[in-house]
Image (tube, rainbow, N blue to C red):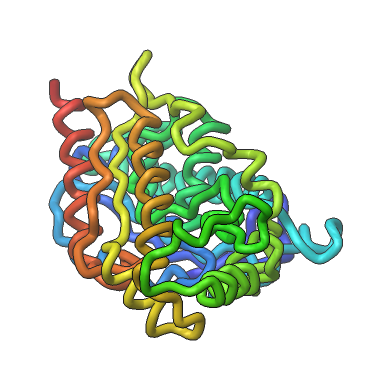
Length: 328
């Protein structure tokens, strides 16, 4: 069942979350935080958590709906910023949420049961972010803002943060446009229609129910492979696993969806650009601490929905690397 919390800096606004206590050595100093995209709420992580909860050595698990999303109330910051808030507000809220959850759900409980077998809890947790879509952008910005606090990131089909997505496709009205760049089964009209569809659905200027203003994200993260992230170990980055959607599944969903995008057009431009972006994400840490890009076979953009077991397995893999390092 979900609970609500009122963060100290927004005391009049309830935020919905779910918390599952950890067990074993990893529970003393680590916290796994699941970060939603724009569309799917925290409940979509529950099948993955069902797999993870059987592990005898794992951190506590935290999901939440951001302000204006799922079961949470609208962000009160919207009132001061013309009806929206930006992603920096989300990063700040997340920091406060993590502090409050660790203090009230982990540290306080530990103090009340001082003899518990898992050991004394750390003052602040080392984080493992499991994120999808724009949640990956939030994870990167949080890790950049609080260097050394994130031990691992699982990035599931991250948004292409430095693109408006429309310009991934060539502009048929540009003076230097060459129709020869199009796949044989795609017409200029198909291209024009696809760009219009992406503009109306996915451009950063398009409003969303969360009231998140996304216009500054490309400026905040202009590159996929920088800035490099810093992990808790001196001089080393965090463990990072990058996962991309299945090209054919994603293209088929684009064809069957309301925009009816030809599969060959998706593969020639969007999937190619996304694949290169994911390669950059894998360079946010040292090569030996990076895995991927892994292709989630049979999955579209919402990998936690399409294959929760894969997400659990990849999370367990990262936790195993953390545990191995802790026991050396």
